[in-house]
Image (cartoon, rainbow, N blue to C red; front, top):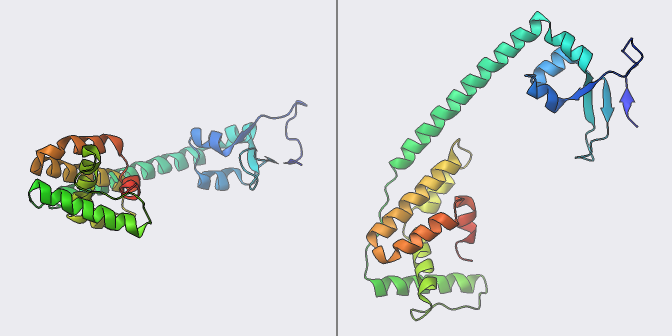
Length: 218
Protein backbone atom coordinates (compact mmCIF):
# COMPACT_ATOMS: atom_id res chain seq x y z
CA UNK A 1 0.00 0.00 0.00
CA UNK A 2 1.33 3.47 -0.86
CA UNK A 3 2.17 5.63 2.15
CA UNK A 4 1.12 9.24 2.03
CA UNK A 5 1.24 12.29 4.25
CA UNK A 6 -2.00 14.15 4.94
CA UNK A 7 -3.20 16.15 1.93
CA UNK A 8 -1.38 19.41 1.52
CA UNK A 9 -3.33 20.87 -1.36
CA UNK A 10 -5.97 23.44 -0.45
CA UNK A 11 -7.86 23.20 -3.74
CA UNK A 12 -9.18 19.71 -3.11
CA UNK A 13 -7.03 18.18 -5.87
CA UNK A 14 -4.04 15.90 -5.50
CA UNK A 15 -0.68 17.63 -5.71
CA UNK A 16 1.69 16.57 -8.50
CA UNK A 17 4.52 14.39 -7.26
CA UNK A 18 8.10 14.04 -8.51
CA UNK A 19 10.64 11.29 -7.89
CA UNK A 20 14.37 11.53 -7.30
CA UNK A 21 15.21 11.18 -11.01
CA UNK A 22 13.06 14.18 -11.87
CA UNK A 23 14.64 16.10 -9.01
CA UNK A 24 18.14 15.37 -10.34
CA UNK A 25 17.09 16.73 -13.73
CA UNK A 26 16.06 19.94 -11.96
CA UNK A 27 19.51 20.27 -10.38
CA UNK A 28 18.94 18.60 -7.01
CA UNK A 29 21.62 16.46 -5.37
CA UNK A 30 20.87 13.72 -2.82
CA UNK A 31 22.21 15.96 -0.05
CA UNK A 32 19.98 18.84 -1.16
CA UNK A 33 16.94 16.56 -1.18
CA UNK A 34 17.78 15.37 2.31
CA UNK A 35 18.40 18.85 3.75
CA UNK A 36 15.82 20.98 1.91
CA UNK A 37 12.93 18.55 1.38
CA UNK A 38 13.39 15.88 4.02
CA UNK A 39 11.19 12.81 4.04
CA UNK A 40 9.20 11.96 0.93
CA UNK A 41 5.56 13.04 0.84
CA UNK A 42 4.53 9.70 -0.57
CA UNK A 43 5.99 6.29 -1.40
CA UNK A 44 4.84 3.79 -3.98
CA UNK A 45 5.95 0.29 -5.03
CA UNK A 46 8.89 0.51 -7.43
CA UNK A 47 8.01 -1.22 -10.73
CA UNK A 48 11.73 -1.56 -11.53
CA UNK A 49 12.82 -3.03 -8.20
CA UNK A 50 11.18 -5.27 -5.66
CA UNK A 51 13.15 -3.75 -2.80
CA UNK A 52 13.24 0.00 -2.22
CA UNK A 53 9.95 1.83 -2.89
CA UNK A 54 9.77 4.94 -5.02
CA UNK A 55 10.01 8.13 -3.00
CA UNK A 56 7.91 11.04 -4.23
CA UNK A 57 7.88 14.69 -3.21
CA UNK A 58 5.20 17.32 -3.64
CA UNK A 59 5.86 19.59 -6.60
CA UNK A 60 4.45 22.45 -4.56
CA UNK A 61 7.03 21.90 -1.82
CA UNK A 62 9.77 21.48 -4.43
CA UNK A 63 8.93 24.80 -6.05
CA UNK A 64 8.84 26.55 -2.70
CA UNK A 65 12.28 25.17 -1.86
CA UNK A 66 13.66 26.15 -5.26
CA UNK A 67 12.47 29.73 -4.70
CA UNK A 68 14.45 30.00 -1.48
CA UNK A 69 17.93 31.61 -1.31
CA UNK A 70 19.28 28.42 0.27
CA UNK A 71 18.48 26.38 -2.83
CA UNK A 72 20.32 28.68 -5.22
CA UNK A 73 23.36 28.70 -2.96
CA UNK A 74 23.43 24.91 -2.62
CA UNK A 75 22.93 24.43 -6.34
CA UNK A 76 25.81 26.78 -7.18
CA UNK A 77 28.07 24.90 -4.75
CA UNK A 78 27.07 21.55 -6.27
CA UNK A 79 27.86 22.82 -9.78
CA UNK A 80 31.29 24.07 -8.71
CA UNK A 81 32.07 20.71 -7.14
CA UNK A 82 30.89 18.88 -10.24
CA UNK A 83 33.12 20.99 -12.50
CA UNK A 84 36.10 20.54 -10.18
CA UNK A 85 35.53 16.77 -10.04
CA UNK A 86 35.26 16.54 -13.84
CA UNK A 87 38.45 18.57 -14.28
CA UNK A 88 40.33 16.33 -11.84
CA UNK A 89 39.06 13.21 -13.62
CA UNK A 90 40.12 14.60 -17.01
CA UNK A 91 43.55 15.43 -15.65
CA UNK A 92 44.01 11.93 -14.23
CA UNK A 93 42.84 10.41 -17.50
CA UNK A 94 45.35 12.45 -19.50
CA UNK A 95 48.14 11.55 -17.08
CA UNK A 96 47.28 7.86 -17.44
CA UNK A 97 47.27 8.05 -21.25
CA UNK A 98 50.62 9.83 -21.18
CA UNK A 99 51.92 7.00 -19.01
CA UNK A 100 50.62 4.42 -21.47
CA UNK A 101 52.39 6.15 -24.35
CA UNK A 102 55.63 5.58 -22.43
CA UNK A 103 55.07 1.83 -22.07
CA UNK A 104 57.72 0.09 -24.21
CA UNK A 105 56.26 -2.14 -26.91
CA UNK A 106 58.78 -4.63 -28.22
CA UNK A 107 57.96 -7.62 -30.41
CA UNK A 108 60.69 -10.27 -30.74
CA UNK A 109 61.58 -11.28 -34.27
CA UNK A 110 61.80 -14.85 -35.54
CA UNK A 111 61.23 -16.59 -38.83
CA UNK A 112 57.70 -17.41 -39.89
CA UNK A 113 57.88 -21.20 -39.49
CA UNK A 114 59.36 -21.00 -36.02
CA UNK A 115 56.77 -18.45 -34.89
CA UNK A 116 53.86 -20.50 -36.19
CA UNK A 117 55.28 -23.62 -34.56
CA UNK A 118 55.53 -21.85 -31.21
CA UNK A 119 52.01 -20.45 -31.55
CA UNK A 120 50.62 -23.94 -32.28
CA UNK A 121 52.54 -25.42 -29.37
CA UNK A 122 51.24 -22.78 -27.01
CA UNK A 123 47.69 -23.11 -28.30
CA UNK A 124 47.79 -26.87 -27.76
CA UNK A 125 49.08 -26.42 -24.23
CA UNK A 126 46.19 -24.09 -23.52
CA UNK A 127 43.71 -26.44 -25.20
CA UNK A 128 44.93 -29.36 -23.11
CA UNK A 129 44.61 -27.26 -19.97
CA UNK A 130 40.95 -26.58 -20.75
CA UNK A 131 40.26 -30.07 -22.20
CA UNK A 132 40.00 -28.83 -25.76
CA UNK A 133 39.68 -31.40 -28.53
CA UNK A 134 41.13 -29.28 -31.34
CA UNK A 135 44.87 -29.55 -31.96
CA UNK A 136 46.72 -26.86 -33.88
CA UNK A 137 49.48 -27.69 -36.35
CA UNK A 138 51.36 -25.70 -39.00
CA UNK A 139 49.18 -27.24 -41.75
CA UNK A 140 45.95 -25.90 -40.25
CA UNK A 141 43.75 -23.24 -41.87
CA UNK A 142 45.74 -20.06 -42.54
CA UNK A 143 43.21 -17.76 -40.88
CA UNK A 144 43.24 -19.88 -37.74
CA UNK A 145 47.05 -19.94 -37.67
CA UNK A 146 47.24 -16.18 -38.04
CA UNK A 147 44.77 -15.69 -35.20
CA UNK A 148 46.58 -17.91 -32.71
CA UNK A 149 49.93 -16.45 -33.76
CA UNK A 150 48.81 -12.88 -33.04
CA UNK A 151 47.30 -14.04 -29.75
CA UNK A 152 50.55 -15.78 -28.86
CA UNK A 153 52.55 -12.62 -29.50
CA UNK A 154 50.07 -10.46 -27.62
CA UNK A 155 49.79 -12.53 -24.50
CA UNK A 156 53.07 -14.40 -24.24
CA UNK A 157 55.76 -12.16 -25.68
CA UNK A 158 54.56 -8.79 -24.36
CA UNK A 159 53.58 -7.31 -20.99
CA UNK A 160 50.02 -6.77 -22.21
CA UNK A 161 48.24 -8.54 -19.36
CA UNK A 162 50.55 -7.05 -16.72
CA UNK A 163 49.86 -3.56 -17.99
CA UNK A 164 46.11 -4.17 -17.95
CA UNK A 165 46.25 -5.49 -14.39
CA UNK A 166 48.18 -2.42 -13.28
CA UNK A 167 45.33 -0.18 -14.49
CA UNK A 168 42.54 -1.73 -12.42
CA UNK A 169 40.46 0.89 -10.65
CA UNK A 170 42.11 3.85 -12.36
CA UNK A 171 40.21 6.63 -14.12
CA UNK A 172 40.54 6.20 -17.88
CA UNK A 173 41.38 2.50 -17.62
CA UNK A 174 39.15 1.44 -20.52
CA UNK A 175 40.65 4.03 -22.87
CA UNK A 176 44.18 3.22 -21.69
CA UNK A 177 43.57 -0.50 -22.18
CA UNK A 178 42.42 0.10 -25.75
CA UNK A 179 45.50 2.21 -26.34
CA UNK A 180 47.86 -0.49 -25.01
CA UNK A 181 46.18 -3.10 -27.14
CA UNK A 182 46.23 -0.94 -30.28
CA UNK A 183 49.92 -0.18 -29.80
CA UNK A 184 50.78 -3.86 -29.39
CA UNK A 185 48.75 -4.91 -32.43
CA UNK A 186 50.37 -2.12 -34.42
CA UNK A 187 53.84 -3.27 -33.38
CA UNK A 188 53.01 -6.87 -34.34
CA UNK A 189 51.75 -5.75 -37.76
CA UNK A 190 54.92 -3.73 -38.31
CA UNK A 191 57.21 -6.58 -37.27
CA UNK A 192 55.25 -9.21 -39.20
CA UNK A 193 53.49 -7.65 -42.23
CA UNK A 194 51.91 -11.01 -43.05
CA UNK A 195 49.95 -10.69 -39.78
CA UNK A 196 48.77 -7.12 -40.45
CA UNK A 197 45.35 -8.23 -41.70
CA UNK A 198 44.73 -10.30 -38.57
CA UNK A 199 45.84 -7.41 -36.38
CA UNK A 200 43.34 -5.12 -38.12
CA UNK A 201 40.63 -7.74 -37.67
CA UNK A 202 41.29 -8.05 -33.96
CA UNK A 203 41.22 -4.28 -33.52
CA UNK A 204 37.82 -4.11 -35.20
CA UNK A 205 36.35 -7.27 -33.67
CA UNK A 206 37.41 -6.78 -30.07
CA UNK A 207 37.06 -3.15 -29.07
CA UNK A 208 36.78 -4.00 -25.34
CA UNK A 209 40.07 -5.28 -23.92
CA UNK A 210 38.40 -6.65 -20.79
CA UNK A 211 36.47 -9.15 -22.90
CA UNK A 212 39.39 -9.74 -25.25
CA UNK A 213 41.49 -11.23 -22.48
CA UNK A 214 38.74 -13.74 -21.74
CA UNK A 215 37.98 -14.57 -25.37
CA UNK A 216 41.56 -14.74 -26.61
CA UNK A 217 41.69 -18.53 -26.66
CA UNK A 218 38.08 -19.25 -27.61
